[in-house]
Length: 241
Image 1 (cartoon, one colour):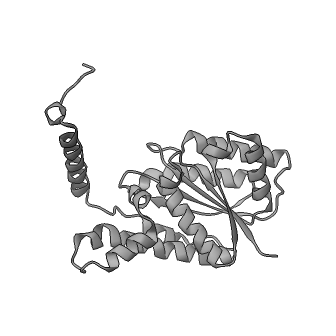
Image 2 (image 1 turned 90 degrees about the horizontal axis):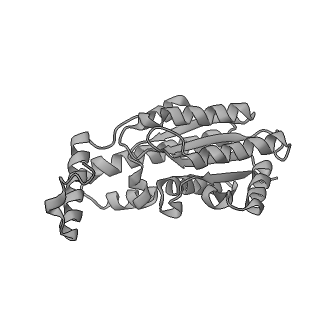
Image 3 (image 1 turned 60 degrees about the vertical axis):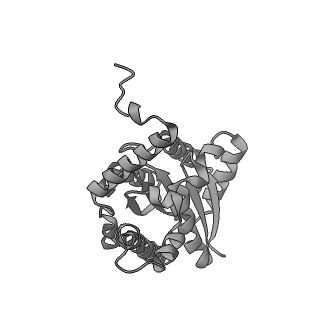
């Protein structure tokens, strides 16, 4: 029998989110290996009992679980925690059999620094252990907003057309190539029924953009929006003081 996977996407931004973009790309790599993937968006599913039951049934039948979620400050979002509680309850009610299931998680931080994801990934690992899933590793993604705008294949295609000394090769091309390579190695490990090697996940422990460049870019964007709105003279207003 062919193996199956579930992709649990936990961002309220839906298909416009980095959680969707990265999880969907990882799902496509599983699909290339002959793994049938069923996708569920928690913000839609948890509103309707019939969708919850459909998701639980898919998890029960799955061999792999892919959790992809945003990071709120340095913590797992409420809807992600609620999803895990629903799954845990279903296991206790024996709606999900204790067959061998491999689980991985993608944690998407808007901040540049990857390590903001550390606590959330530990929570997802503990969730896996408590439910007898096989924890295969978590991806700590910094500056994940890049992938909300463009998918990994789109970024790789765009930078391929740029000169080697173009700054976008360093800011966007290099980090994306690393992430893409780690994703491919992760899929290979899963197909072999193994955990993702820690040395592969450690390759994601980098800050993709210099902090000064990130701050300057943010300030520039802030000023440009103010110019469009005609509010440049109000940028330092303190209306609540």
